[in-house]
Amino acid sequence: MKQGNESSITDFILLSLFLDSRHPGLLITIILFILGVAITGNSVLALLIWRDAHLHTPMYFLLSQLSLMDLTLISTTVPKMVTDFFSGQSFISHIGCGAQLFLYLMLGVAECVLLTFMAFDHYLAICYPLRYPVIMTPRACLQMATGSWVGGMLISLMHTVYAMNFSTCDSREVHHFFCEVMALLKLSCEDTSTYEKVVLASSIVFLLIPFGLILTSYILIFLTVLHMNAPEGRNKALATCSSHLSVVSLYFGPAMIIYMTPGSSLPADVDQCLFVFDVIITPMLNPLIYSLRNKEVLEALRNILWRKLMFTVKR
Image 1 (cartoon, one colour):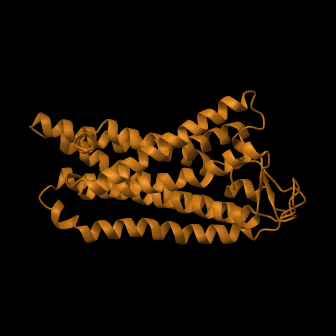
Image 2: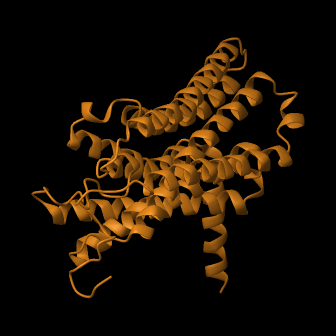
Image 3: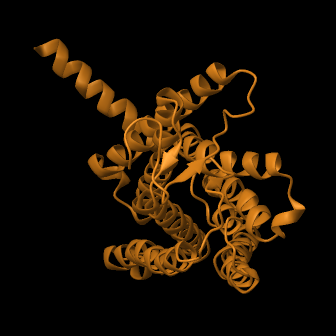
């Protein structure tokens, strides 16, 4: 890359969220606040699950993987956006763009698979409690987590290599705040209609089918809960499932609108808002939903804070 404000011919220019904003200072302050809350919330939740023995269960192990994915997801896009805002430049190299695209797609697919596994975990715990310890062994949990990460990597690698090899026209301006696959395709001089159908097919496999499986799991769960005699067990089951359903709605809702509707049918500002919600806001909300509505997580947090306080007092 050349020095100064110039870029090489292989660089892309990201048209950030601040381009048409009337109050860019306020917007960057909000984004920095969201970034801080997301990093703190997901890090604390993952550390709590790792340190507290009471949280060493399949459900919380899978939840810790979700926190790691959210932490990586928001770190993939927002720091670059913030750096561009303060530096006054919005260039990203071809390799950097490919890396950002790869990480975003990998984490997107991995979260879809992981959320489906989490729904299956809840289904087994509530509908088949006696068989649950036999099926959800530590090895099975590790396989679920590994399958989510590796599956995301393989699918993302395929899409990234294909999308980054399209030849581009004179314009290098990506109408997005990060390197997103559909935004990159708009720069291509080639016919991308066939690949767009591949993206739609991938969306059906990794969005619609998992979402259908999750809904089926929860229909069966609610039917089981309705026949429970103990109010305490019913309330605990509903609280756990409502948290997961909230996260599923936050993640799958915007993603399905983005990737399962024709690109031209969504106005640019609506498309950007959906990505902001999916990539920036959801990673912040997930740990808050799981911690504020979960007595076990709150109890673990209180215990650690109390031990730290007592240790400080003794010193």
